[in-house]
Length: 297
Image 1: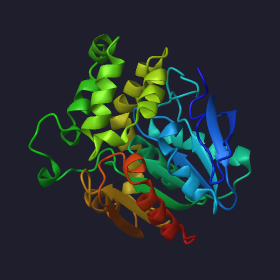
Image 2: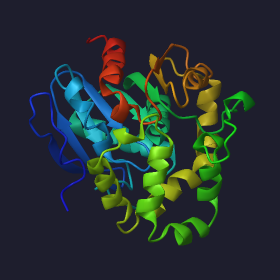
Image 3: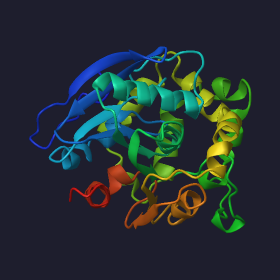
Image 4: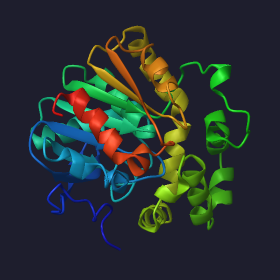
């Protein structure tokens, strides 16, 4: 099986440079391309760095882009523990140091956004800008008006309750990973057709590997710990500039309202024509928002 994200290319169509680096007790798989000030990309669940394949070529003309398989995902190591966002933020900061980046921008979507926030909160002197995309921070209240009527909508957090149960998710998901995660990805999108066969094969290829389900569930099962570890930073808002990105057909302006509670300098944008997986559905609009925020458009 080829490495995760092997199809990632820069704006010239050249493959990104892949590598594995041991930091903070884990070996992380990453892919790098482009020139300029660094931007680190962190994907969510159940994805890998491959999620960013349509966005990366739009950023590499202006930036050195580092796409990372977060701890436990893709071709990164799957340790037993360390799936709280503080530990995973330390992974990111240590990786940046290994690359020689004293400071950097960090972009995260879904669970990757929670890791990106923790990176900005626990490593304040190093993160120059944060992009927080399409998620809710652990422990912050959710308004009743932000909960959809349909009970199977993931914004109602049924999956968080399910994944948090001991033993049952492992038992029920075994052998059904393709059906479950295909449904889950498409259910959250404005345009389900934007998930290509290549996207699904990449996804299924890693979630059926040993330890993959454990890594996904461990991330969700760390939510209460994440909230407790983040609380001092919620009380002392981060000061780096933040771009809060929501999808018109999913979290929308709720992302900006979340960030305004925990950061002092927040710009909010809602990307039209997209559901939860914006980088698959509207990569050009998303890149434009990023580059305008970075000041390199």
